[in-house]
Image 1 (cartoon, rainbow, N blue to C red):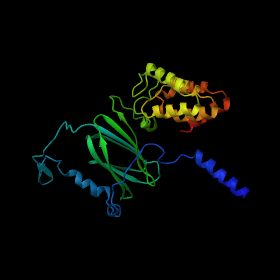
Image 2: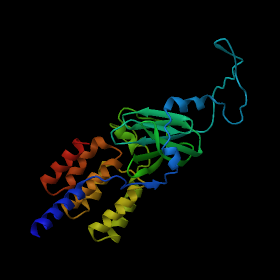
Image 3: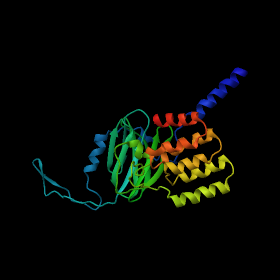
Length: 286
C-alpha cells in the first residue's frame, strides 16, 4: 500500500510540472465530417481550385498556344487585411489551408497574411488527410494566434492589432508578443500597460487582495489583455510573499514581457539565490 501511495504521488508531481496541451485559449469546434476526414486530398490537387476566378469575376482567360489571350490582370487588390498565425508543436508534416491560401511544411509554423475579414474556413491536413476544419471570424488589421494539437484540437490564444512594424527574426519572440519585444531604446508597442494604468492596477490589487493566490489570479486575468515591462513585472512578482509562487509567476509572465532584454530586472524580486538561478535556467532553455 505504501509503494502504491508513493508511486501515485510521484506521478502526480510529474504531471504537475508537465506542460499540457489545451491549457490556454478557447477550443474551436472541429467541423470536419467523418467522410471528409477519410478522404485523402493532396495539396497539389487542392491548389487547382485556386485558379478559379473569385466571386463577382466571371472572366475566363482564353489561351492561344502557351499564352493567355486578354488576361484579366488585377493590381492592388483590396479584399481587406487580416493575419492568422498557427503553431503545431508536434512532429509530422502538416498542411494548413486558410481561405484560398495553403501552406505545407514540417516546421510547425504557419503564417498567413493578406486575408479577407469575416468568416474564413481553416483546414488542417496530416499526410494529405483532413483532420480538422473550423471557421474563424477574422477582423481587418488584426492577427489571430492559434495553437493546434491533434489530440486536443485548435485553440484560439488571442487576437492582436496589426501595426506598421513587423518582426520576423525570431518566431518565438513574436508568437504571443507580436510587436512589443524590442530592445534598446525602441518605443514599446502593442498593448503594453502604461505606467499610470499599471499603478492603478497595482494599487487596486494590493488593496483588494491580501493573499498571494488572489493577487496572482488578478495578474493572470490582466495578462489575457495586457503586456508588461520588465520593471512592472518585477514589482508584481515582488508583491508576492513566497518565493515558490514568485517563481511560478515570473515564468508565466515572461511571454507577456514587452522588453525581454531587460528581464534581468525581475531577479531582484526574489529573496533566495536559488530562485533567481532557476528563473535564469528557465529563460535560457526557452
